[in-house]
Length: 292
Image (cartoon, rainbow, N blue to C red; front, side, top):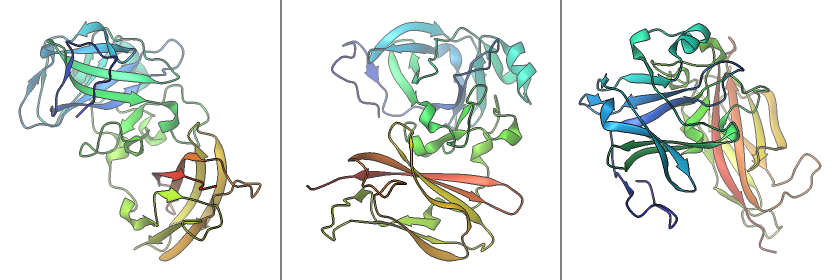
């Protein structure tokens, strides 16, 4: 359920559950190319897009409405909305042209923003707050790379549920299954964190974060990096290291210069590789606290 802030319009309401969800967003197209928003019907009944609007989100309230055309979105199916279907077709592997629907869309800033879907009577049924920090940390140029949702069972605004579309897919999968939703190399539960809190103050309580792992495939390698909330690289714990079947990695709350990091939110970015070069990234958020 989405929570309405005190600044939100009094007439606006939020739906507790709705089948239509945001699945993929290309908010930063290459120069001269078109943005797109992919929606997914996570329910068991067909939906008519004409019952919904894409809405610009301004100061925590609904702004300009962009009505959607008549289109039947079948259960467990995808549709990609764009201003220019020809542009998307020319630059991405569009498997089903019928699943590209042209319509007006709000402007989506490259620095971050919100994709909002509402009913015609202003009930917000989906809101995705995207950020460039959700992209792969190894990605130097984000232009032309879509953000893809990994699981429809997890919260839309779970930052770890989004990742850059695979280069093997052409950096976008408009109108069909996301490249990041395919079978993963390992289950995310293979990496077990000792806590979501770290307090590196020398009092022997949560001074270190332990990352224990258990692999069924001993040939996998991994890189583990720590980033702060602004996406800045703080520390590398592993670099293309062979994992083996089990082990423990420890972060003591220091940066590359062995200085204790400032209090705040940090992201542990684990990228796992197999021998063929296939990779999977797992992210966990950790809060760093200091008691003195």
